Length: 115
Image (tube, rainbow, N blue to C red; front, side, top):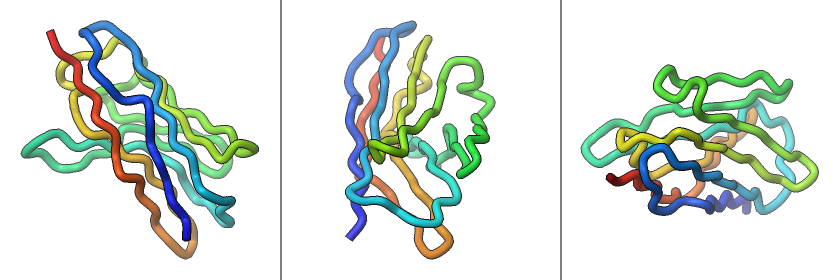
């Protein structure tokens, strides 16, 4: 079955950068959107960024101008470049891929921004 695996999380100081990667185990047909979500302790999971099948991107206001979502279809990869990180960005980050038929989630990767 389809699996999404995130990597690239870790501990970073405020103002630092991280790049998250998500690899899909096999090609997925009819992708609507690929995206990144995050969930901090005691809070709702929220959309960070997504990218449509046509390459259109959307960002949460809190990360706009700091984060960039991208994809490499040939490598079955989705990326999230995170710059100018703040303590408020601390959360588990999840990769998500939507298709006409299914909704796939990765297991999450921890991002901690600590000062």
